Image (tube, rainbow, N blue to C red; front, side, top):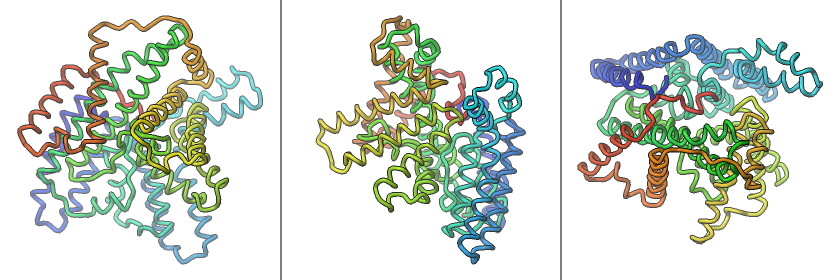
Length: 482
């Protein structure tokens, strides 16, 4: 399930060849769709069983529960609104129960312990079982995807899926199971139920997306980690300037890591003939935090908008209620990311800044080039300081690191070799140029050039850069733990 591992890269072509062969052999069979879906479901669960057998059982349980609940919801469509509301509330609570218990039990118990001032050693002993609970891979992602489907059935936006095999594949499709993107049923299910065909463009575009994803992961994210990890682990001994550089590098690291995963997942999906939602659109070129969240983790932003913000009332009930809804939505975002107060404060900070932007009217009018540049820098700095909360284990540590940055505290500078510094500089320069070209000059993207020779040469050069300058240790993706 580690999409950047050599094991995965060895198995993927074999699995793809098997899938293409099955599609070709069954092309004139009326059951071809069932056969291809069964094969993809087997592949998906096979990857999961190899990595986490118990996690596969929980995935199946959540899938089965939400499948049955959706059928019940569809059968009771004509009931009174209050009855249906009580029904969907009960179903959603049951569906998210595995996530709540496995991910948040220890946090909630510890929070109540702190409130009632129990001794720290008593807390440790009381929570031994909770602290050791097994956390399945991607549980936040497949839970949100299945709950979103259940909610869409309740709102009658879609009909319940009666074919359990199709629904199993929708929830457990292997490229996106670990860290998304979070798909909607009306986007992915029709592709699953449609006739399978693999076009040449699917293979080339899938390979291109995967290659750029591997660049972001191996050359950018994992290279920056060589600077970030030592500083964050011992920030009190490093200077404020070094801490600030590490914070900037972490902002770019988490972008390269998560955007890299998303592109690899989307690329793998494309190899198998599926179009998954794009999860990133150059978020660090945003001119406000509001715009940032339209470009960062797009599938989660859409999920929170559709299933939290709008049901709460959205912007339809006056400004005070709108601000409250924004804060509530981003508190949910923080809680979703992790069972820690740092994530909750991180989410509330993003919500607060968006409320201020609405209050000041930022983003309603287009800005000139100079003002746009300063807005991009300011937005990046706000996101950067918020990422400190995201990265540090406690609020105290996050505050300590911020204090060292703001006060320009004296301390050591991280010592890296000239080679390491050169590789980091190259990765950042390459990323910056690529992001600017993709945002402002999309027709000049070499990997999509109309000339086959240019595309092929660009592909080979990027592959060479990954193999010679990347950190090829198959390190796990950051967002897998969420």
